[in-house]
Length: 197
Image 1 (cartoon, rainbow, N blue to C red):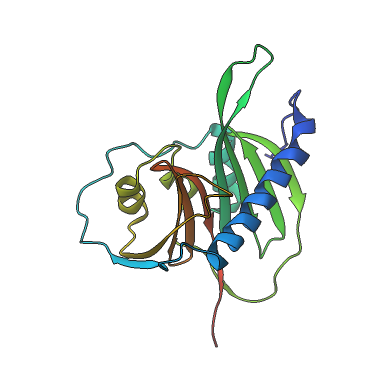
Image 2 (cartoon, one colour):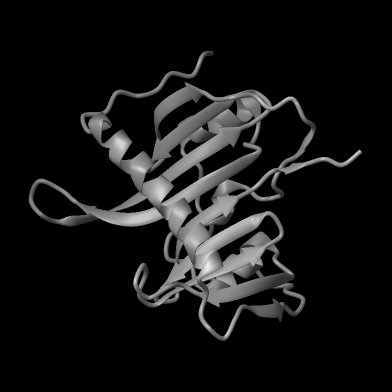
């Protein structure tokens, strides 16, 4: 069965969402360069045998179908934020972009619904896919839940530039970068690595 993108009335917002993703990535790069003035803090995480307090995310039927047909992405980006509806009420948005570098595809989802499936530049190199899955991360997770769910054993933490993000912190682990705002998960980016040899 071929996977098709769903038509949604707010598809025109895709450009805005992708711009937001780009700004977030640029902000993360900026924060890496202009970290808090005391410098980053390296933290060893004690062995975590217990499960996270907050349940991980459950893939939608469409997302599970993608995984069944072409596997998990080599890397992915997640953004958690709120937007306003027509009645000026707030609602939660989980934006995901799954990157299939070898296959040359980028698939985007909003709240589990596929909004785009676009070709991307394929990579000829052998890649080590990120050892994480999108469902390991849920909106508003606390740090201890992120660390337990992703099985992070060591990370570097730095404060976000308060001009860009107030009450924000950025965390760097192996093939993983994530941001916390006011102690809650707000963004995740994983990275595939080029295999050596």
